[in-house]
Image (cartoon, rainbow, N blue to C red; front, side, top):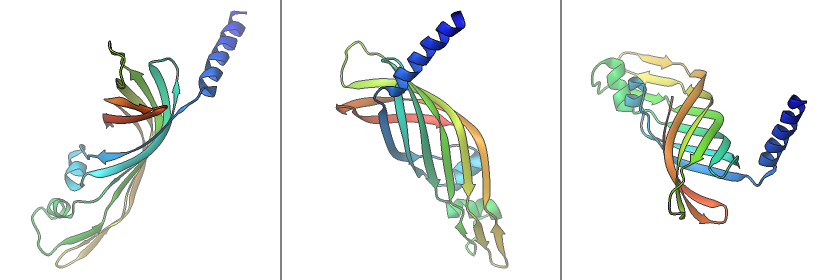
Length: 182
């Protein structure tokens, strides 16, 4: 009897949450290659595009399934210096862009403030699956040309951060967020 009652209450809570009016998020921003060192040193700051659908579980807690894309271009001079071990005026590289796709679920907690205003700080954490692709690189040196083939991998990710959202009107928010994913 208790299991049936728990199931009915859980089903009602989940369906009311999922049938509630969701929040839709579209984001873009800059993305910085922090780690590992061989990646962060050889790639420029890139851009991010993404989207998510938010479901409010309580007035302060939101679940956001989403998808994101990050792109980084190769820092040719740093890569050549690392690859050859010196500054090589006769070497050049083409290709090598890094593309990251991730899908996952974020959990956002809106931190209540004493004065209810248009700005609300929050803490966010999430996890999911990611795919990384580094395109083929052609490294041309004085006496030889080396082809570094395309590299792809899939892995789990986790991360978190802090931010704030500013109510722009209705169900529209401007958000600023800093986060670190591994």
